[in-house]
Length: 147
Image (cartoon, rainbow, N blue to C red; front, side):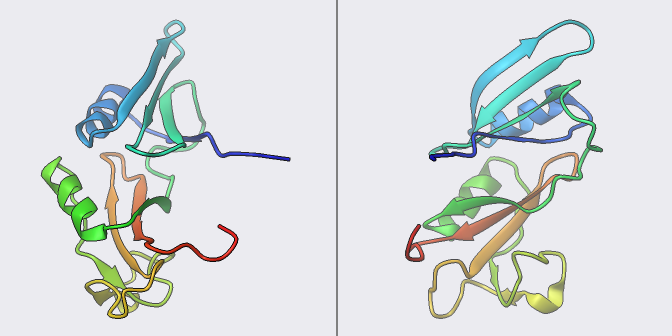
């Protein structure tokens, strides 16, 4: 069986503000569908991604800002971070360390800069959207076997 993750739902409080934020990051707008006063769905896709995000009105019962640990993979974390910052995102400095990706707010798990050995999966940076939904950048230059 072949299964692919297609869309992740984000809980937001203001659809237009979220749409402006993500489009400002350079994400492609795939859809903005209004189905009456109680339903609207917006879908955007990060550059190069096969998975999109959706948010809107009547889309989820999750509280705005509660989606955390969303992972964006890049092969050049410094360049990706710089571009996101240039586009208006408040991205942390690049860090590495044990389990830093899973506890990005715990400074004891963050060592400054890229992983000194340049190992894939070890260098990260974090940012949030205007509602507080949390994103993690992760540098992967060589995939683990089987990926």
